[in-house]
Length: 255
Ligand SMILES: [Zn+2]
Ligand SMILES: [Zn+2]
Image (cartoon, rainbow, N blue to C red; front, side, top):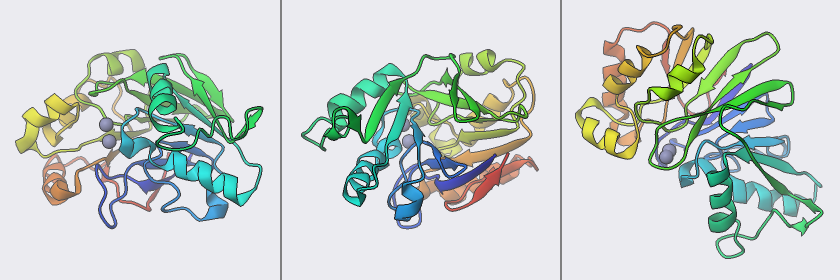
């Protein structure tokens, strides 16, 4: 599985884009980065978007993509998947004809640009040739991470935003994760803030790792706050894990 990192930052600054992970050019996990980093032709290849939670830095690209589809007159359409509370929030608070036009009924209600699909936690669905299962994570709003499995049973798990969680790892159980994309938003000095806001520090991340039954083959760190990037990088280096990569925007990873 080839995953292009459109963005992997916990905030927006020049050269630091919010999360967006593009699998095989057509399945996007979180839409924090999208139309701001992909050319039009690449945008029109996206068929499915899976959202972990409704925070703005994870959904920002959806309205702009929809607008580009409309004005590009390509006849393209995109399916957006997430858990019901996220779908409701998108509909009520974003595509509500006030903040942005309702692209779930445009250009025609019978053939809209966006269709919103509710997922059930731990109920796998097929997205193209992949099996995708949402697992509940621990954030300040309803949120899931996605376990993605290909035909060869290679798996990656993308946590989205999460604080410490017992249930996530328990439920994933014995399944071998080949690529773990996990957040570390804050440095160790901000542990209290991390717990309060549903995020991980380096130390909390290390503790999460100890809860995973089968050690992930490769670990990729996402969502650091750019203000603390250097501190987090230094803390991660001190863990001396040779299968760990602190992600950068624009990078491609293979699972
Ligand atoms: Zn969040
Ligand atoms: Zn976030």
